[in-house]
Length: 458
Image 1 (cartoon, rainbow, N blue to C red):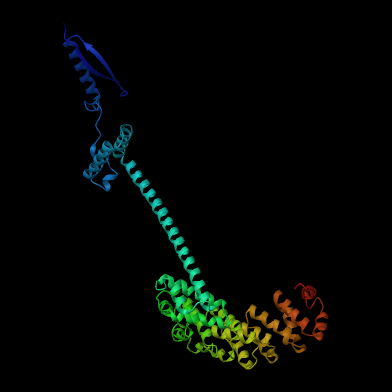
Image 2: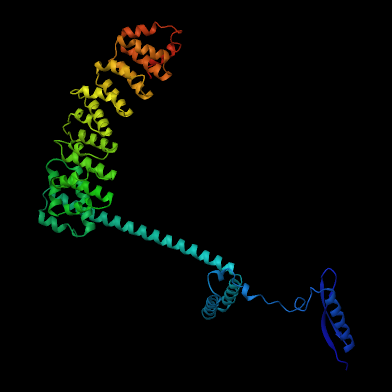
């Protein structure tokens, strides 16, 4: 039987297309012909060689695997991780799931970018889980704290009320004030006492500081007032001011110049509260600004607690402009006419706001002798201050000032003309008659100005 030879050969065409086909040869001569044809094709196409034309599957270059992961981890560690994952799947996963799992592991490590994406996804999932757990913990902690404060707050309120109204004596009250040595419980009791102090007046009010001192709660407040944190300092100052005034005075003096605005403001308010006989004596030692919030709070305290009002004219010479401005406001509000000459001097101030308040004080206090002075200051003033000067003539002006107002109505801006017309119209009957005698040629807008002034809606 002739020897059969089975071989695979490639027929090469000029366009580079290879075709595989299987032939059976009956003898060695045919086999030699095939070898010769193959050699000729190789010589004509040198780019094609046995490696490129091999029908076997080409093996991937192992150095190109894990190209992304290799930046961070060595091949040995990558292989170890892969083996551990495969081993875990073999031991713990069911057969149906195991096949899919192993296939995924193989693909992930062959295509390292997938592993990177998987790591990122796991990282984001871990972050979300962490945030949710933290949020859940925070909410639970807050709810527990609120419940704790509510339960003990109500308990302490009942005990304090019973003691104040004489239903129980102090010894029994002290026993009922459970866990009072605990820091959190002491803070709750202090807040209860602060609430009662704000709402009780008269004889009942005296019981609150008594309880505060008997339990040595002032030590907690003093510790807060000496804290390095501003919000704690403010809280300590408030507690000492209302519950331990005799012990707070010395500490307050050291804080009126505190660099922190909130602490300084609270200390200044406390000083006014604790020193009703000389509420503003701290001005003599004040080095920091007297903030507007402090000014408003102090004014409220003066009216609420009926604190004796000092003569504010003496503070007009202080170097702090905000003290001067506050004093001008208080002089105007309380109609202090003792030293009006000091008020008039303030129109010479370098501060625009101070001059404005001085013009306003001249108007509200009806300082008639200052008319000539403010007329001289008019041309050099700001628009806002010019309007305030014109408003003053409505109350302190007379017919001698009509020429000044008339000139403003002729040459001033629309707003200044309107205010000058208003002052001239309401200054007196004689000036009212004079203004109506003007013609349109002299003051073109006169009719419109008068219509606006006479309108009751303005």
